[in-house]
Amino acid sequence: MDAGRVLVDGEPGGRVAALDRGLAFGDGVFRTLRVSGGRPLNWSRHYERLRADCALLALDAPPEALLLGELSRVAPAEAVAKIIVTRGAGGRGYSLPSGIATTRIVAAFDPPLHPRERATEGVTARRCAWVLSQQPRLAGAKTLNRLENVLARAEWDDPEIAEGLLGDAGGRVIEGTMSNLFVVKAGVATTPSLDRCGVAGAQRARVIDLLTTRGVRTEVRDLSWDEVADADEVFLTNSLIGVWPVTALEDVRYAVGAIARMAQRAIEEDDAAV
Image (cartoon, rainbow, N blue to C red; front, top):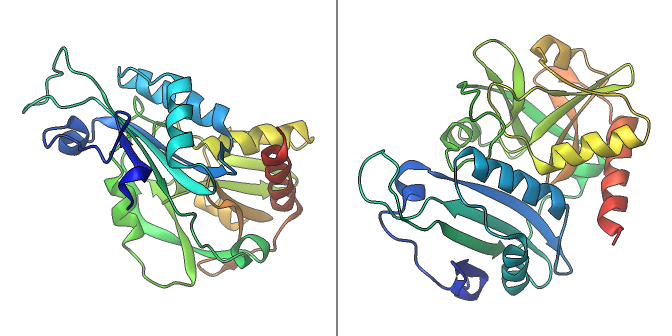
């Protein structure tokens, strides 16, 4: 990657200390977002989530203006941006060191080349064998501890399968390896509760808001695998893919539904608003 597209504490091509706690313990948080025309999309929700996750870990959240300035430096046009905040370099051991400064990384990448057909025609998903562990105090946060997602994503290499769905030990459906999940039944859009585990994506929050303002009843609650199989439509969301309708999950088939299409249009309209 071009060193000019990575800032570490504001310095281009900067280095992260070998003893940084983000590297040693996953002691930090991150957000990934789309930048279009130099404008971070859905920014207010991303920054809100970043601040909340920093507060959960007792980290100082970078000022919003500082992050926006650094994003404009690394991503002046079309890009995927990633913001990482770690506790900083603190030596060996789990105890929280005092008097150290957080590490801030802002990086930009080329936009992903996802086939357009995934949004228009839908995708195939699978059920992962990997089961998410539960830690309610960290539930919803996007910490640097994403090993479960990495190992779940390693379960398949079939390019025809776009995503894998993860559940918990209690038999509840939680999320995709890289996405949040919505199911629609009788016109009601439901997304799984993330009170025990999982990541609360900024796009998930936006879709809930956008559908609600358009008159769609939305619910956040525990969701079973049987309910997913019995859904009228299923779709996935994250900040890079937007909305992908699911047309196949194992041996179950779904049509691309009206609510998924509504969510896609609503995101486009929201992104276009200045």
